Length: 127
Image (tube, rainbow, N blue to C red; front, side, top):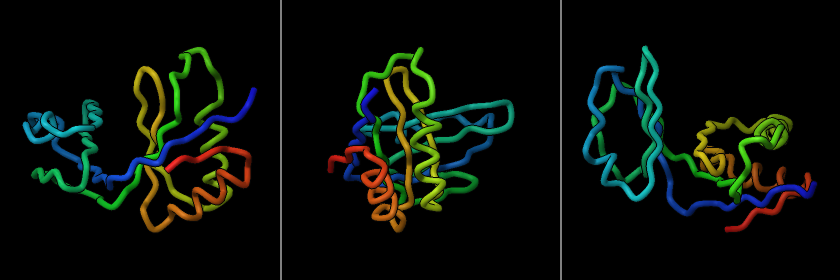
């Protein structure tokens, strides 16, 4: 199977941690792109850096690389294969998934190394 193409999103993102009982801020729901995860212990929100919300902790300046899909839910090893490329390049990732695809968030300062590593391993990266 040929390797996937990843599209680099132009905006920068911030990862927020909120109390698990906190309501989802309206600013999140108005954002053009966002990701929400909730467990018994935590509510995590990823929004563009320019969306200001109150959170317990946050970490900004991330860029998103979207695995162009749609990817079938029965496909095996996509995240593991791409993740191993980043691990070999010593690039930290934060991964979020949707029904159709996966997004790898990379710190902006690590972006050049991440793109070089992907291309060196045969992946296509569009900007």
